[in-house]
Length: 534
Image (cartoon, rainbow, N blue to C red; front, top):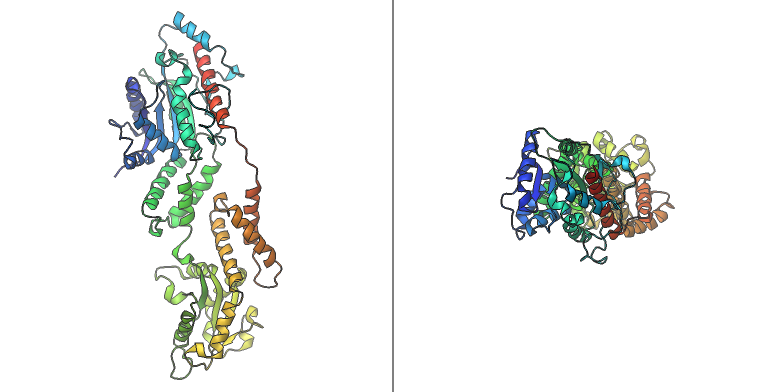
């Protein structure tokens, strides 16, 4: 089984393999686990590429002025699809004798590169801006339509090394923008997936026995927000396993893992700097995990005391509870029973609360036992707080003065003395009629409540909000429901709809794909010019 590792080092050309080997040595010296595929998996082996890339916390691409081989390109594409933190490393070599005449000529060709702040000559930026130069003349604006890096943070990283000033001659001998031609291709591919990978550009010198300032800067950047990056990889691998098993519930996150995942989701979407964003699959995985098999909506929750399990409908007759279950089952009404449907290892209070949230009707079986049963009464109060419909069913005589105040004045169904089958009795028909009255309204109330509670348990993450169409549909329901005197929507449901509607009306702003790619060009040209002039 493949283990997680800190960096996947990819090389586009064999001439840069010694550089990558030395970089790998430095990373290991600082305690990082790095991996270079000795023989890259073929591009037609997606499962192998998925495994290699998904287990890498960071991807380091050694920039070359050539088109990247298909194997390398496939891995970069997968890294972008998985929203991995991608470092584009420009190799630097130590300056030996300074710039010669050829160097000066090369320098002259770059002096017209625009840069407004000379004080920042030692700093390079993430690819996040605009310019007018095209990176790949073969790519039209149509080819790049939809590419979106608008969310990239314009964070800069200081490069203050005085040990070197000369770029790899192979890069300088060519058009410096040619090194980005492959990235332009990747941007075209990325536009169809509408994701926003982090691209971090750094120039790093690895030669010598003493670590250069640029190398230390790379180490520092790798350490930045490392725990968020590591959690990203772990959740990605688990989400991929979930999807490979047809999204089965047994692969959901549970308990502490789910809590940590929700905290990570909120933290990483608010993080700044060189981090990575969650994928849609990770978000779906976390949201799905907030559900449980106990969350299936049912029409009826049966709440009763332990001592009432065997109370007969009439002397010598079957137990009232059994007759009641038969009645509901025959009517096609789904139900949840605390004593029969709750797993033995489950916390009863939590199970009852979740089941109450997921029921349309809280049916409480009244008896002297029930009036002293803590779980029945706690469930009743919780159901009332959710504005659930309460249906009291009288099993045996109780003192009306001892009824909980909310039940006083409520109509109840009297099963005392009824004979089975209950479907033939007035009491049985009365109960079924009560449960079917405005059933659609109460089902909608439950569905909206469940969605709002999931959103709340995700710490109100935007990904838990409704789609525009759903939000408008539920908004119309809310407007009508607010006019009712009973079973109105609760505040959380109203807030959930409001936030969902607000999200659908928020304006979105993004630079055009050509602007984004052009500014990437401008950043590199400016940086190259600054380095050469030194």
